[in-house]
Structure formats: C-alpha cells, structure tokens
Amino acid sequence: MSSNNTNNTSDVDPLCLKLVDNKCTTCANGYFVSNTTGKCTPVNPNCLIADVKTGLCTKCLPSLLLLNGTCIYPIENCVKYSSKNYTCTKCSSSGYRLRNGICINKDITCAEYNSSGKCIKCINTYYLIKGKCIYPTFGFDPLCTDYVGSFCTACKTGSYLVNYICQAVDVNCITFDYKKSIC
Image 1 (cartoon, rainbow, N blue to C red):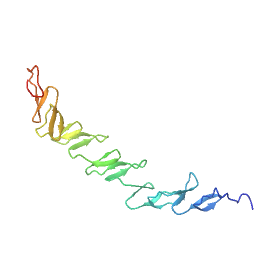
Image 2: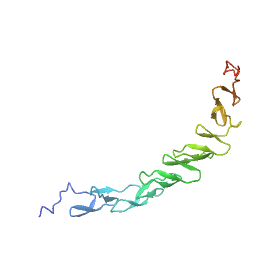
Image 3: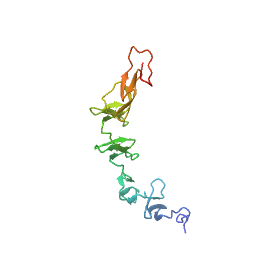
Image 4: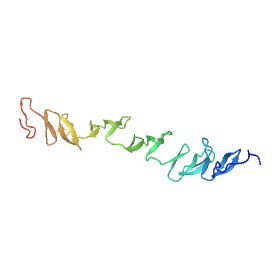
C-alpha cells in the first residue's frame, strides 16, 4: 500500500461523505464544505434549503426573511434592509419612522424629523417645545418653558404661573414672592 493513499483517521472529517484528493467535496445533510477551512460546516439552522456548495440559504423557515443567502427575523414595517448588519434602512411610509435600525410609530403631530429621528417641525397649530409637538390648551405662551400634556407647568424667569398661563412680573415690582404670586 502506498503512503500517499493512506488516510490518518484523526484528520478525516466524520461529516464528510466524499473525499477527492484528500479534500472533502460532499458533506452530510445540513452541512456544506467551507471554502476557508475545507471542513464540513453546519448550515444556518433557520435555513430550510441551502446551496450545498456555498452554504447560502435559498429558502428559509416560515416567517423568516431571505436576505443575501441569510435567513433573518423580519423587522416590523421595514421595507429595506442593510446587507451588512441586516438592520432596517427604510420603513413603510404609512405612520412609521426609522430609529436605530427599527421602525417605530410616527408622532402624527410631527411634520418633519431629522436624520437621528428627532422631530424638528410640527404640523400647523402645534409648537415644537423641547423636541415634542405641543398643542397648548390656552394657546401659545412665549413665557412658558415646559408643558405636561398641553398645559404649561413652568415659566421663564421674570414670570409666574397662574392657572397654567404665564404672567409677567410687573416691571415696577422690586421684590416678588413667587410662592404667593404677589409683589
């Protein structure tokens, strides 16, 4: 027997079904020959049917999405994915916006978002205050600095709050008691 034809059993891949010139060419079901290692490598478990030469999926398990030979869990309301990390790059236009690779509900009061997903413009009759679209119950108050819901809850320095409306301190007042709202 020639020494070139003997195989060391410790080097033989037990999942290899066919050897040609001491290289595996066919693996057991559910495996493919890796181009980098030459060994039988498992097919992605989410893959229903895979190419036996490349290991790339051609059909996924139900409810999974086939993307560039890989089965991924679909992102709700996503219509376009990144081929590098499989995050969402575009959401369906009806009521969703992209934020950190997923689609989230749009705020119907926001008219425009910046690239990081923050509201930068509100629809008519709403005002952008601290990144949120507010519809002030008592109209826009230029002295108001914070809202809870649609009610003003804090005023600029030099003004005070009365029934959710900011009132300017009288310019003739030298000392004002903000707790009692009197000069």
